[in-house]
Length: 362
Image 1: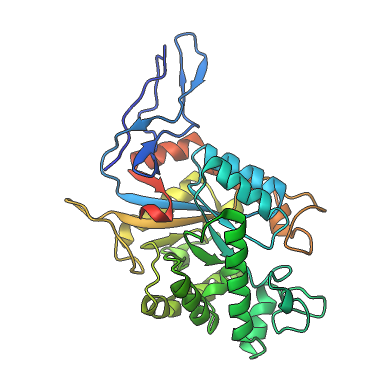
Image 2 (image 1 turned 45 degrees about the vertical axis):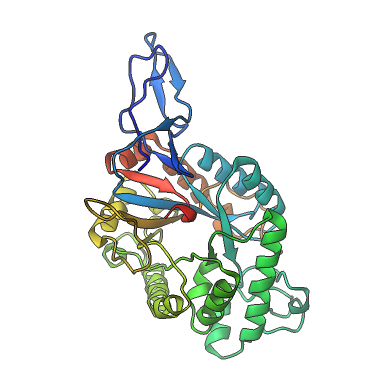
């Protein structure tokens, strides 16, 4: 099993012995964010280097969502990957800067999946842009809550949902040159009633092996979440739990544990991420089922942490056809970028034997 070995920079008098490993293929690399001080007090960056690490306790996929949303989000996500803060991205193919994002993923060898979008912007499938159940009178998706309301009232055609999902997979393949390594849903639409069945069928038929099941341990013991978010997240959790037998029936896999609802935006801190990781270890490899890695001592727990790092979108540049939303323009995006690349978080990963990886590595 690849792992991390303490390294000392040339002519260095100090070194961080709690560096976190990033799994790329079968090799673990140092985070570029790690620095050492030389004998004169000057800092120098420790580059990525092959290393050996003790058996990890957690294999953690840190997924940067909304890749492609705008150039500034793309820039922040790439910087976060290069600094060792994320290990995976999820692409919005109908977004303003999707092609640039796909090119960046190729250039920097970033593991990439599809962030299927049925709720924001313009459909990819041309026949669904007018007079379809998925769009409003302006030819735009109904929005996060509007999509759910239309579904609940029976207004959505599942045949059209399937058409759009397949169109987005085709465009993903055109942009990246391959099928997604994983596929999840923007604003968690993939676990909604009826949609989950169509979603699972598409993944199964196209042999896309992994998805996301947003059931987060510790969700109901977070006093910092406002009531409206707690209500929404509780419903997301219920929909996700109801999706498990559907995804299982179609042979779809997902990590043992999901994180990200309780650590979004200003709620992201090293302390809150440490708390979230403790829930991963408490849940163990059973989690919400799916996959675990063999070990001679104790099973490794697999987990996904959903994050949204970047730089705030310019008001007139970005989005999926209707301009960037408040979420993308918020300073929260840069706050997440700062926390995810904080050397103390990377040191925490090393202390807790957390190995960052991609879906294909679990």
